[in-house]
Every structure is written in C-alpha cells, then in structure tokens.
Amino acid sequence: MAKRTLRPGCAGSLTAIAVCLVGGLVFAYAIFNKHNAPVTSGASTSAVASAASSVASKTGALASEMKTGGLLMLVNAQNPLPSGYVPTLDTVDKYYYTTSDKDNHFDSRAAPHLTQMIHDARAAGVQLVIYSGYRSMAYQTNNFDRKVSQYRADGYGASAASSKAATLVAPPGTSEHESGLAADIVSTDWLKKNSDLSDAFDKTDAFAWLEKHAADYGFILRYPKGKTSITGIEYEPWHWRYVGRDNAEKINAAGLCLEEYDGKA
Image 1 (cartoon, helix red, strand yellow):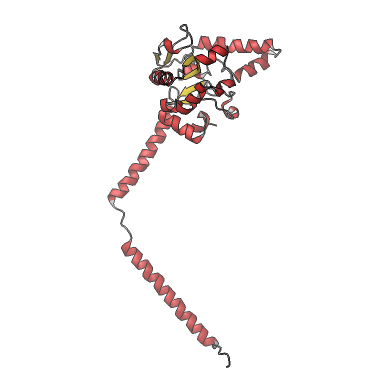
Image 2: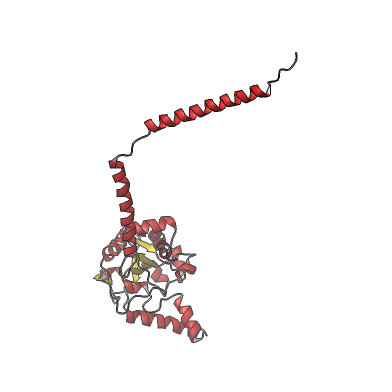
C-alpha cells in the first residue's frame, strides 16, 4: 500500500488547531485558579507582621546582649572592658571553690546557675570545684605577669614572652574573668594529681559531665578545640562562660565559639 503524506497546507492547519486548543486550556486553568485561590485575610496579614516583628525583636535583643555588660559581650584584646568596669556581683558559697581564700564573687545573673550546676554535678558523683571565678583588675595583672615571668625563665625575650603569655592568660582588661561571667572549673580528683591546669583535663569524667550538661545551666566551653585562630586563646577545657541557657544551647548545636555566634569571627 502506498504511504499517505499530508500536504503542507493540511499540516499547517492542524498545528494551528492544536495551538488554539492548548491556549484555550491554559486560559481556562488560569481562570479556575483565580476563582479558587485562597484569599489573604487581614488575620493572616497580621500574623505575618507579628512574626516579622518577633524576629526583629529577637535580633534587637541579641544585639543588646552583645554590648558591654550583656551576656554575649566579647571580652578580649580587640574588645577590652572599659576602664573601671565592675559587674553587678553576687557571692557563691566558698564551699564550691578549691580553697576558702578565693574571691567568691560572680555576676549576679550567673551566680545561681553556677551554684546549681556544681551542686547537681556533685549529686551525680562528679566533684566539681571552681578553680577561679571573678578576678579584679589587680588580680588579673598579677596573673598575667606571672605567666610572662615563666616564659622569660624559659629563655624568651620580653616581647616574645608577653605575646606567648597572651595566648594562655588574657592581659589585664581583656580577661573574661573580669566580667564576672567566666569560671575555671576542675574537680577534686584532678587537683589531687595535678598542680595546674592543662588540656589533659578533657580526659576526665568531670569534663565529660560539663560537656554534656553545662549548657543546661547556661554555660559554654569558651575556648573550644580548633577555634584558637578565631578566639586568640588556646584550647582551655576548664574555662566555662555563662551566656544564658537559650544562647548556650544554640551555640553548642551549631558548633560555634562566641565570636562566631556574635558574628564577629
């Protein structure tokens, strides 16, 4: 049988008809959608505005906490405390310190949470103790000078010793301890075997407990491993900073240090 072939004119007519049919279907679909689309009510508009306002409010609150005196304030070489800065302080029972001659003051917003954290750890069989909490400017000056002297004794020059010391002990005015929001925490077992602080503390049950539970009380590990290039301070598994529970949980979940959380890394 001979093969039938459409004439050019017929093919063009069929194409035109197909285009018209498709166009009609698209038009009908658009009309249908227009009449059946949900109408945005005043209530839903209000909800959107409310949500936007809530986000703006939270952003503003976060920015406020980053200012001097806020729970998220940075205290370091680039962000020193104002001259004469003294936080609003409360006391923590000296029972929770390594020795009774320690300055047992702490920021009044954080003191109850620090006390509760150590109390709960001890109830769980982990004998945490505060090695160092709030430090005055005079105390921090002596602490820094002592570390410089150690490096000088090891053969470093004055400038090099000062620079090296600054990676381990914050110079006066740049220490978180002066904010009243930071505490060096170890355990009684650690003190029985060690005379000073070291990275080896992160191998203890005390550190494991803190790593798991500190955020529940609003504390974060301030100088985490692998963040020295950002914080300017070498890894310190004993140094814990109060930022409030909500912030602490978010910082831990994201694996950030405070500089990164504040957007100043």
